[in-house]
Length: 101
Image (cartoon, rainbow, N blue to C red; front, side):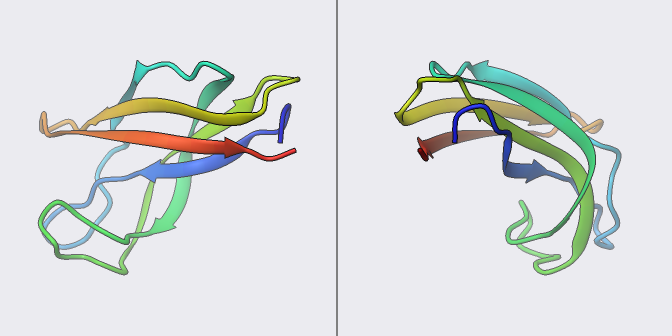
């Protein structure tokens, strides 16, 4: 919905014991054409996937990615965000959002 921020993802990292790591550094690697992005730290999530395949279902705290469509926008928008943990490990995620009216 144009003008309203919607959370689309939470980037979070965990150690081998499934304990939250410090928040990753986030960078927009492909800007959305029809909206704006914001990042909000301190977001809690339940892990659906991890790089090692362990810790599925564990709770973690990370940084939320929020998308706000610009007024008058409709259709689909795409963007990419790269997260870098303090260890140097990176992950890039591509997003496709459909703008609700």
